[in-house]
Length: 219
Image 1 (cartoon, rainbow, N blue to C red):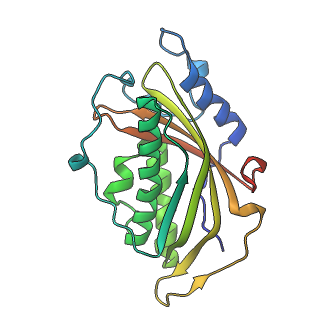
Image 2: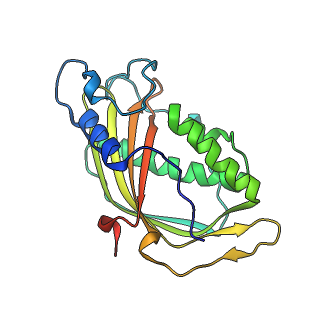
């Protein structure tokens, strides 16, 4: 089968609206409860402002060394806005970090935990555990495109993008057999994510919803 996607129970439309409301708010006041993301852990510390802290240096970030049979194409341009470009960059690193945990067969791998927190961190752990139980990992090539990013006034952001899984597959680790299937409309997935800038200056992803086969991502 084509690559699995992180299981999310929440409605994509409901959560997407909340993500965009949170990220696009131009109020100087703290966002009201109605703008919070459904199911978010409200015990988190208040987010720092988008420019409050410097980004983590390269030496602070975990190394992500993926095998040669995995490749990624990110078909999105820099926006010229430092905050938005940082969101895009850290979003890319999370994508690779999750696959790295799958390749390493490590549900508690440090790289994805560096770029996630809260609900998404827990969901990712379960997601990787499923691959470990199945004794499989991802292989092939992935393309990401149609990215849109919004940065709010309170250290929050929303990032949406499409994923092309048409040339990406699961591989059985014991045998090396790749489960190749032809691409269909379900090979194209729309993701919506919510992020916040942590005290280390890293844009960590806290929420993610996906919509397989979404018309916006079809070729």
